[in-house]
Length: 251
Ligand SMILES: Nc1nc2c(c(=O)[nH]1)N[C@H]1C(S)=C(S)[C@@H](COP(=O)(O)O)O[C@H]1N2
Ligand SMILES: [Mo]
Image (tube, rainbow, N blue to C red; front, side, top):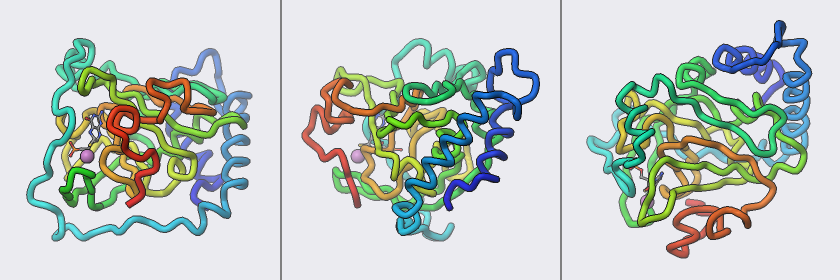
């Protein structure tokens, strides 16, 4: 199982350090925590057969890492609130997790760093015709979603970004199979250093079996939805809405 019961409980406890628990003295007694564990576990059980056969994207050795890794799409975020947060090392920043979840979260960067980490050296393939191999580190997205607890009608995970590209806010989305895939992480570290602004500080998605445009940079808010129709152009992502690219960008 990719998300075991024990692991989920561990993650719940770890993430609790960065959560705002309103009036809950004992985490284990909180109905919200019990619900989120039960729900994520149910989801895992329902999805297990699909997930078990799920191939991993190829991982590489340190020696194979690209000497340089291009910045593509937005290299800078103009939003003034973002620029203030960048200036303070994202001290006051939180990642919002909401939508179809039992318990909305506001996770600080420290809370994300305190969760169990995954490190992977993978090849990024951009649809525009370039590739680069880099090392990424962060908590698994599945662990974050497990802590929030998905509601039964949850189908998609949407990433709202801080930047505006070609006059439109950048966003992306994936389904739950990719969301709970072992290599799908919220990376805050790249090539053994904190993520630079150009590569998506403070946190960017790595969804290794899909093309580069799915790997949302500058993620500010994660929204769990039943449908993608009501968001922006309705096709689930910036490149899908405005450039005609596929929503499922499998490599
Ligand atoms: N928020 C946001 N995410 C984004 C983009 C962007 O412009 N804005 N560009 C996408 C594209 S097309 C690619 S190839 C990768 C580039 O990531 P990099 O700049 O770290 O190389 O980010 C993707 N995620
Ligand atoms: Mo890309």
